[in-house]
Amino acid sequence: MTTSVQPLRVALLGCGVVGSSVATMLVTQAQDLHERVGRPLELVGIAVRRLDRDRATVPVDPSLFTTDAAELVTRADIVVEVMGGIDPARELILSALQHGASVVTANKALLAEDGPSLYAAAHENGVDIYYEAAVAGAIPILRPIRESLAGDDVRRVLGIVNGTTNFVLDKMDSTGAGLTETVEQAQELGYAEADPTADVEGFDAAAKAAILASLAFHTRVSGADVHREGITEVTAADIQAAKDMGCVVKLLAICERTGEPGSGDDGVNVRVHPAMVPRSHPLASVREAYNAVFVEATAAGELMFYGKGAGGDPTASAVMGDIVAVARHRVSGGRGPGESAYAQLPVHDIGKASTRYHISLAVADRPGVLAQVASVFAAHGVSIQAVRQQVVGGDGEEHAAQAYLIVVTHTAPDAALTATVEALSDLDTVTDVVSVMRVEGS
Ligand code: HSE
Image 1: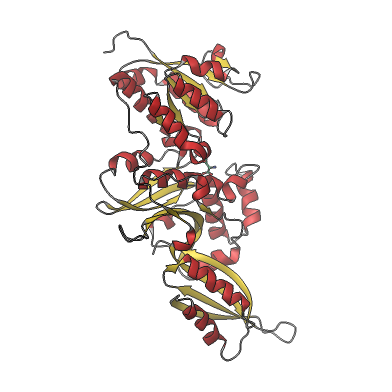
Image 2 (image 1 turned 180 degrees about the vertical axis):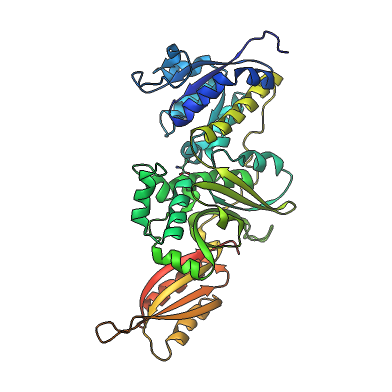
């Protein structure tokens, strides 16, 4: 039984795929939301760029649509930003916070670029800024890291946090096709944007990695701190090479502690790159456009969070959860946890990360080559786990045989592995460094 009380005014910035799902849920679930929050949530406006779009499927009074976002944020208790982009989203969020509104945003790019300014503004004005939808869509992952694991010691977060690239890599794995044609197929099916740069070059995953690392390690990590490699260099041959060693290729966001506490090397490393993952690892079974985040914490051990990382309704689910959370705080008079960056751990570059490499070399097939290659690894302190030679071709003088050495290393600092690959490419007997890929999750 609810009594008549003053509604909490909700303003929505953006009415694209996510915004229209949020607007619909606010309207269709109004009674349940009222019960769960303790006060009604009233949608007081939806800021859009243009008023002439057909929005008949969004079940709201058309008079709620406005192009004056700056005015709208001044008359709301909760501002929901799902417009994306850096500007004007940043100014609108700052204005909302300064006017005393709590903010819910899905804007990973903005948070990775300028999160601390927004968190500070929320703190100064005694309100919340929540952003569960910014990472991995529907999957509850930020709240578990920020709250459920707040008493543990998170050591590593491994995430498949970009559905587009996971779809592309999964299809390459199942069909044997190359990258370009698979990206085109993903575009036709609506999984990839017309301009897929943010996804295939790893920018989207890097922003999410920065947000995950900041929360997991109580340290400010920006998008610029993240080592980023996308999937554009991944070939059908890489996928086959991964298969040959019982792995799949995934674009991983990796956030990890480096060094032991008090060792002087203690810090964090955050990177996004394609990696071979053993098929036995839980992340290897994440297919199509799904996302998953694998967390390793000292006491909890290994945890995995799985689900839809994009799409209107899944992302709106995370937004709605945040709306309810910040609304409850307004009803109870408190605030949720703000930024926690007390640890201020140094953010190391990828050179200090410990990884394994899978290296494919085209080599001359003559005595002493294997020993020469092995000596380069030894000189850089990199231990070889396995070596395999493949000879391709050799069907007559026109098609001379080509020998390939496939080398898989034990774990070593990335800097040593990079230097090893450079030295290998200088050898006369190495005609080509065909591919280099990190191996993770084993
Ligand atoms: N473009 C992203 C993806 C979803 O493919 O996962 C939004 O971050």
